[in-house]
Image 1 (tube, rainbow, N blue to C red):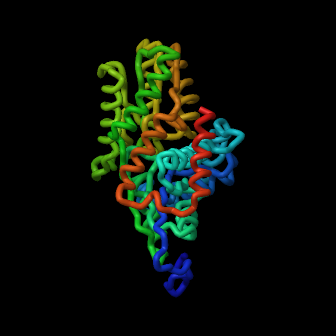
Image 2 (tube, rainbow, N blue to C red):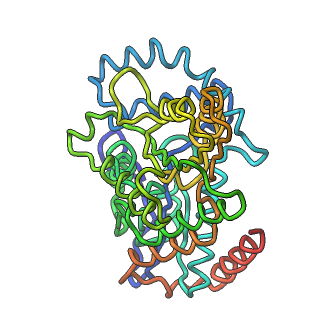
Length: 369
């Protein structure tokens, strides 16, 4: 489906008049190395950090920094971090994203909608181009692009859309496309977050402080018009209201700073250290911007954040897991998907065996809850 050296398009499956419309959802996350080894982490970081949406520094200068410094020293350190959270099934991010896609297809099937749901990664294996190629080969005529990111940022959401546009630029007969930009204030997403936290508190009690840690981005992105900062704070405000928290009972922070430039503040780890020194005994941390647990939640928060808080004098640190395969979250994701699929045919695909398989998969996954 790619264009050749002369600019012409490669051969595609022939168009068939009267083709039955087929609808699909592409559930997209950031990506992960294939293994927690230095070579695989280096390949992943090279692709990720070469994206101009992610690092907005003049290309030549950044190329020298990336290849002369970062890719020489960071991969080994990052590989050790990945290894600390790797599971028997593989990368937590991949495991949860794949499971969410399968469960979403099952949830949709239970409601009578025959929709093919695939997952894809912006960087690394199971790429967006690879999955769109597969969907097109299967005769898909309409695709909904569903990001795993609730809050919109040019560094994540827009970059994901760039990859879709790049694929479409090499295709002759482009499927009809729809994009979900954000759902940071969707009442169902907020309700799922609140239920997840309340379920944890019902068993473990409440903390002195709830920290809502979002992934950081350079502060300059805010001044350039990126809505991410505002959407994170709106998510936090709505979540706090749903939980009945007063302003002094929660704090919004930003993690994963890279480089020396000023990023969105306050930073997560320094905030945890300040709380520990100030005599806060128990802190619970939740990461509302991540719908799947990953390196940034399991290692940076649950391990590094915990150590920083306890070393500073805190007595108890709890990390509340992401939504992952929570049934309330999957129901919310299903309803959000159906909202954006409105008007598209989702009940006309002829493959009844596929429908039966989707329903069976949903029941099997649900039984494991």
